[in-house]
Amino acid sequence: MLPRQSRYSPLFALAASLAAAVLLTACPAEPEGPGSNQTTCETGDEGCPCYGNDTCNGDLLCVDEVCVAAQGAPDADTGQDADAEPDAGDEPDADPTPIDGACGDNAGDHFRDLHDWPGQFCSAGSLAGDPPEMPAPLEDTSWTCQGESGGADVTCEAARVDQCSPDRRPPSGWTQITSNCDPQNQAEDCTFWGPGGVWPVGFPGGSGLTRRLASGQGSIPQYLSIELRTFDALADAYGRIVQESAGAPIPAVPQTIVTISSCPGDFNEEAIMADTGCYDRPSAIRAFRWQGPDAEPTGAYASSCVLQPNRTYYWNIIPSNSPLGTAPEDLEVDPVCLDGVRCGAIYSPDLGHPNNADIWPYICNPDLDGCP
Image (tube, rainbow, N blue to C red; front, side, top):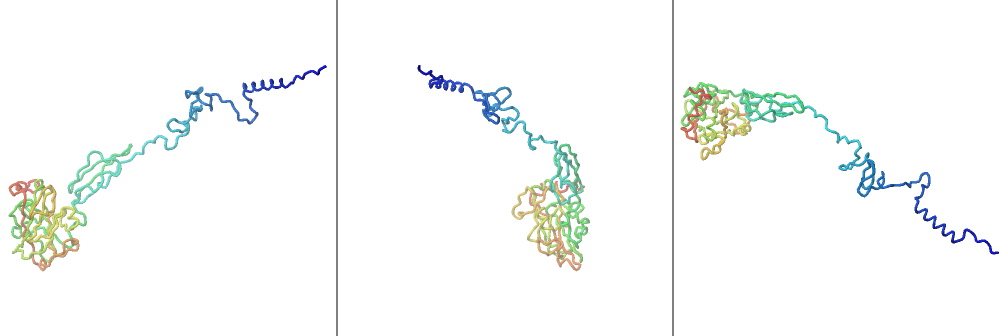
């Protein structure tokens, strides 16, 4: 009797192996146990790939083809966490700090030789309205500096005093001649160019009106300072003042330094050159020349100093033989004026343009010169 065939024949074992392979393919493997990092990832779930149309399940967002929770998703514009705390620089600006208005260096008292504002109207805040004009000597003005962001306004004031800066005042030790400077015409007021003063008409005086002026007498050093006023018609005019030997009763002719300045008794070359440019030592062959700002002098009137219209100036004469440019405090009197000798010269105004007939109606201005 043949032995019974075993149930685990090779053919049966092969069939069983194939069946097991099919079963493993159809079912995913179970986790290997605690600590295993193998997880299920379904499309559209958090941490899993996005759907083909860049969407995810629920409120999840598709970022870089991965579904993530809306909280913590990077901002589309900045790339930063949308829910992260903002940086200090991202915080909205606080209310601005109020700034009170404050006056600038244009406020305060200014010397008469200052014709333009020296600086700013407001050092803080802003100027309300148009800037004011520089006041005339002995006058004042004001303006307002407005505060900013709720700050307070402030009123500022400025004034022109009837005094020049210290370096433009008469030299120490010298005395101004105020009367009896013209022995021929007996001028009573030697401080003014116009009716009642040295000349019977206002500056420039007109041709042919000569005066013998004593600029020194006696043992005390003396000088002349004669106020003159310009006007609109002089803007394009020019002229000169010729100096000649006076003769009796003024026998001595000194060397002189002559200026036209914004300040009386001013012989400071540097300051005058910056003001009018009228600083020179005239002689019989070298006249003292002037012009308005729009004039075009030629020939004997060329190289003139400039006088602005509608200003008050001073024609200053000092009998000194010190070199031009000498500091006022170092000026020495010309020896011919010492020992009681009266010294001076003849001064003749000469108007170059326009002619006398054109300018004469303006020379005697009742408002300025007190003409009858």
